[in-house]
Length: 158
Image (cartoon, rainbow, N blue to C red; front, top):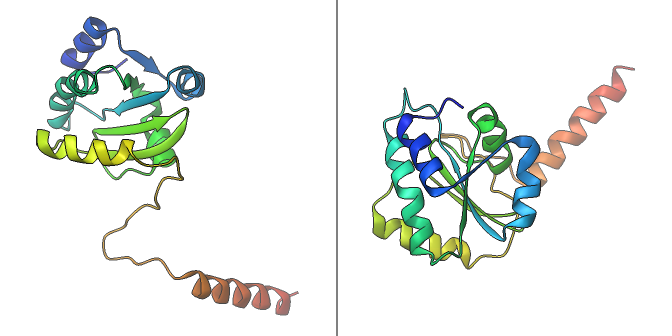
């Protein structure tokens, strides 16, 4: 599974489900509010083991409200594209399969509590667009103008 030895031990001790792209939808439909850990490469990221220790603590703090799962390493990039978080490790919060929010990297405990309370109070929505440093997405009007210009150029080249 390519998890760190610590994360593997926590998964086993806490009976945390490991999900893949193929099993995620069924798991989400069967488990209400889910906290999905997407760990990342433990050999490159020191925070992976910290997040592994934090995961069961977050579940305990939720009084069993959150069901934990860990994304299989082979499908981490798929989860990142689907839920649009910027870095690993990440905790993605889902309700009946719908997106609520995500927290990337390791935070102070008080920040987790504040952000998770905010996330769980939200309605299910689409994940936010990726944020790229130094890039601002064009407005919808500007995008429509660019699209019409491209269409017009394409029509002129026929």
